[in-house]
Amino acid sequence: MANNIVSESGEYDTLEFVKKGENGLVEKVARRTDGATWIRRVYMDDKREVFSALASLACSGIPSIEKIEFSDRTTVIEQYIEGIPLSDALLAGRISRKDARSISAQLLEILACLGRKSIVHRDVKPDNILLSPNGRIFLIDFGIARVYRPNAARDTSL
Figure 1 (spheres, rainbow, N blue to C red):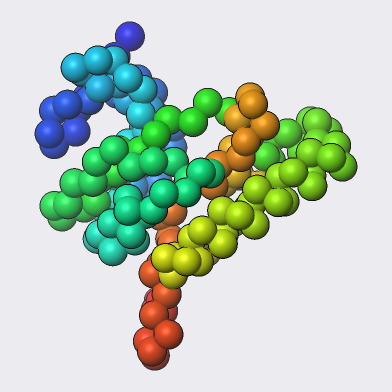
Figure 2: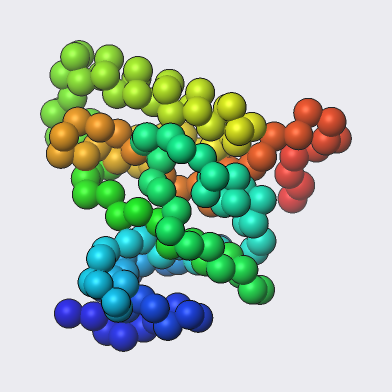
């Protein structure tokens, strides 16, 4: 089942590579002690501020964070969400008006929750919204998220 590629801590086995790019990778992993399924996101830069803020957030609709490791990169172990991207459901024509209203209301609640901690997602799109089988949505992929600072001269640079 697992191919025994493990994190720096050696606690997880990779089950499946989800996405790999120049800025990092995303894997579905199993914890060795109990077999529980998680998502491991590895970022090639320091994401300490945003993921520390997310870890302290109690908000339904955001995957919970199990563990954060910092070295020359940031490794995040987060809740595995069973579901499909909203983009896939839209392409399949499976979203009714009632579903759209529910999804919109849930997304606004999630964004308000993030806003209370000054977290700006910066990549809200149908690919980053998962629809769970019970109708709940989850906003995922905080790789380019930032903690807003009102006095900062600028947020990002090339």
